[in-house]
Image 1 (tube, helix red, strand yellow):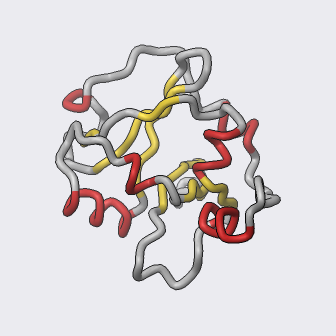
Image 2 (spheres, rainbow, N blue to C red):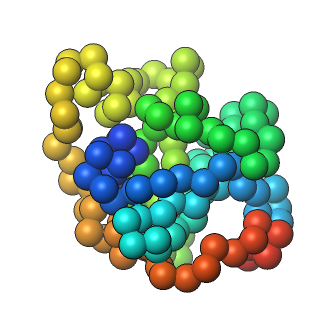
Length: 136
């Protein structure tokens, strides 16, 4: 599974800003990431991370403190569609996140097989859709 620290995506300029918490029509939490051109992509939380976020935050609240050590993972759906998810690092996590390791060992980046260019293609120059109008 390809993974990268969200911190790395912010550091290299792929992600320039992140919205407050949003919910789709099914009440599933996600964030909108903007790049330096103002293009956006919506990234949903992984299943366990989504439960934690929904139990901790209200829609439209900032979740930056909660996601600062998170990772972005790439996965394939059963239909072989590429999706990206936000995975939180929590006290119950069995492993340290890439971000925690970088901080602990004073390193700038951890080498990863995560395809940043492929992720950048997810950003589209389109208006941000209101949460109530998000597709299921």
